[in-house]
Image (cartoon, rainbow, N blue to C red; front, side):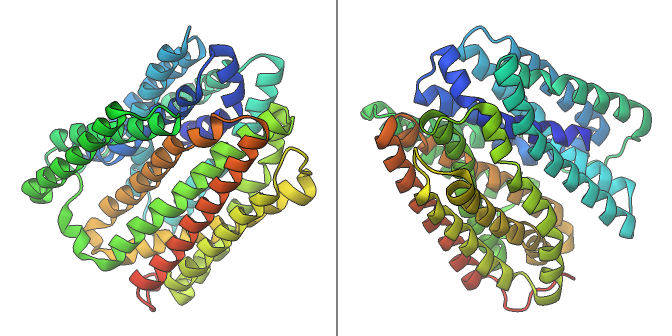
Length: 439
């Protein structure tokens, strides 16, 4: 729980810190986007590989190695002398997170059985919700009173506690696992990196032949990745035979769209309110508190609903609620009041996400056979991060502007987010079975 909380605290804290980082390190919009995406890129690409490495070499061993890497990189972020150094440290954090997140959950899965396993995973998820809540609050207070660099030092005591706990109380577990797909991991990282860089450059207003060539090379690398995965068959990082399942295809598309939309909201709303509406970092941290609280309180009810009626109905409705919340962001401008303009959008989006997360897990379990639920769950987690990676690469269209022009671009982004969420709902209706309760 401590290990996985590292990633949740860090990600939520950074969104509040972006304006301060940009001002201190003189970062342009592309630099700010990469402050986020330097972390998301290795996490998205290597999440499945990190889980497989734990199965192969030992879950506790890879968990501790991931925590150590995350800890060292966090110190590097705190003392980075310039933007390039910060981006390198953030990328190393992403590699560490790709090692520790899947193995923290795998350790719970191997340590508990039956109802005890369900309770343990519930506590694990609750810890993530608490971390997401505390991140912006701690970040806001530290940024105002000490400086943005200290938000990365929060990770030191958490990581130290996680390492001590793992060494003293966690037994080693492994399955032997399949052959590690090193080639697939390298190719997909390269492909995602090129696509993200091209999109970031375009939205920053540069254009030209270089980002176009990068995009073409990235798409070609994706084609090569698919061919490599097909050739490796069951030893592939992502076995293509899984996509014979129509529900899994739908779940993957839905996850990309709804979590991509959510990531845009979590990056842009704090940035816009701090830079145009005069919010302080602490005020922004407080403003976001209702979001994880509503998700944490609402998810259990959505989970029970998915068990009772299947996943199709809640996943056809909940993303529409997210989309409605995105449209409420059209009320947000430089003169917006928190109670009547900002909070309603945050609350509605949170309600929609609370109704999406648990049924999505239920749908994954029903989309593939029991032997592949772990891989399918890992694929879903990687897809959600990839959605965030791609959408964050597009946020430069808003971040690069100022004043009324930024508000106008933010409203366009909100409409796009609403369309993405609506598309996710339509995909759930078309791809999922009308009767898909939890087994």
